[in-house]
Image (cartoon, helix red, strand yellow):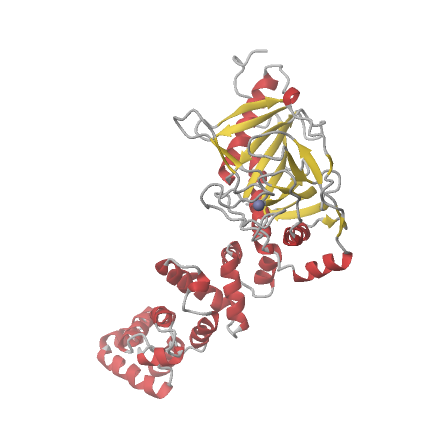
Length: 488
Ligand SMILES: [Zn+2]
């Protein structure tokens, strides 16, 4: 077989079949089988103990919180939960795995047979199968310092709880794979089971890919691209691998089952090992951990406390709150933002006005302060007060923006008091405004004459003049009514 000569295959000539394995680090305070802190970024080998460094004679003790988060995650992604929890040893040797095996789950994964629905960028809906999601411990890290003829091992991560989520071979394009990953990450974040921070490695994936000549042909031989830690890399790696496999098939060759890495700099996939070298993991039941019962009652309790999913929240925002879809998108994309809206509505604000005001003013304040929403002085209750003043026509949108800064800066002063002190409340009393309108009409006699002469479009100029004369505090609706009456 030659690797040259054949030009790049025509697009669509081969049909990709993609499955993803996602590793999610569960957000426990401590590791899975010992009491060491599970924390990112500590100095090397400072979060270790005899258990996670595999000293002889030590025994694992299961972290119940890891199981709870695993069940919550499984429920959030539409899986069935096994009521018997058993662990197995996956035997292999690597310097970052001092035990010589990883505690994982083999034939009885905690979660199985899921259906996960998500939206594609064009708004269409896809549902794919989740074959399984099982608990396992993470390994440590081997570091190869540049220019030094040695390797270092950091076991801080060893024993951190992971959930490995395995999709069915249901994805049909790199873009679809990326959309699935993003929806999965958002769902898991909403469920509160992981921060899913790709930069810290708490959400990473391996991608399986094969090609076939038509959409109903049997699956081809697949390859696996390991350790993709950004959405962009997943898409780029899959595209690169589609090209590589297409070239092999176009040249009449056969794809060899292999494990690959992706080099973001070259944009190419490179072979790490072929099937012949794939380890036989000699799985067997972990003898140091008994089987645990996960009762159906407990599973139902957890289902009951599972927070609303992003899909359900989006439907509620559009269906119940009647928000514009783009507002709903923005508010759902950031869970904290949606939480802020819900709290503001709970405090009595109308959803549409609250959504608009949060997306403009609250976000502006958060960006200016470079702080997360829950650390701002402006609270949902105070936003609800501002929005109520706007809705009641007592505060113009423009004036509410001035007020936002004051409300954030002086959390101890009541909202209405601030608005009064800053002279921002609108004058909507007809008596007071009639005077202003009459004054303006007197000053703008020329405009009035032309308006009465048939240039009705001058109404807007007059309206603007009255607003200006009131220094923006007049209620535009009232001014319009008064002007119409005075000009009639
Ligand atoms: Zn430990």
